[in-house]
Length: 255
Image (tube, rainbow, N blue to C red; front, side, top):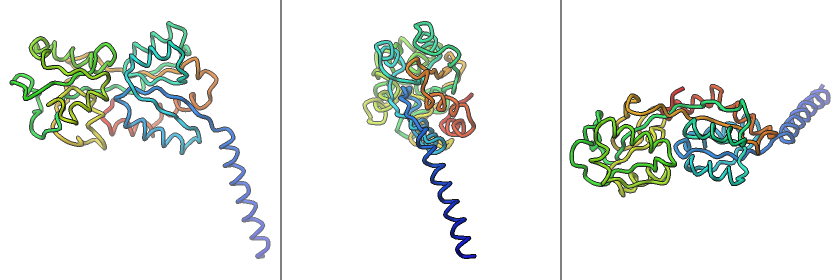
C-alpha cells in the first residue's frame, strides 16, 4: 500500500511539473506602452496577469503623445494603453495598429489636488480665490488629462485668469510630482493618482465634474509589432476581464 501510494504521489507530482513546464514553454513577453495616469493600476494588473497566464508584461510609462511619436519611429511596443481614443485611431490610420483590436479599457476622471489638507474644497472654489502658489497642468498637446484640465478651466471662465500661474508637466506623472513635491500648490491630476482602494490617499481634492470636459476614453490597441505575439493578445483579453476591472475601479476608473 505504501509503495502504491508513493507511486501515485510521484505520478501526480510529475504531471504537475510537466504542466508547469508546458505553461512556461508557451509563456511570452509583451512590451507595453502605458499612459502615465495608468501607472499604478497597470503595475498591479501586470503582476496578476503574469501569475494567471505565465506571460510577462514589460511596462513603459509616459505621455500618450510621446508614445505616438516613438511608435511611428519604430519603437518595438506590442500594445499601447493610451490616455485617449484619438491616438489609437491615428495609429490605425497610419497602418501601425491592428484593425479591430482597439477598445476602451477605462474612462478616466480628472481631479484638482493638493497635498495640503483643507486647501482644495469639494466644489473647486479654491480656483476662484487667489492661489497660494503655482497650478500644475499637464501639457495639453501631449497629455489628454492636460487637455481636459484646460477645457474645464475654460468652461469655468478661469482659463485666462489662471494661465500665468501654470507650471506645465510633460505628462500627468510629472504634473503629479510637481504637486507632490510642493513645486506647485495644487494641480489637475488623474483621479487614479490620488485614489487607491476607493479612497483618497492624501491631501485634499475635488473630483472635477465630467460635464466640464470631454470624456477621457482610454483605448487600448494591438500594434503591428505585436500582431503575432500571443502574450500581447492575452494581455488585451485580460484587460477586459473582471480581475483587471476590479483593480481599475479601486483607482477611480469607470467603464
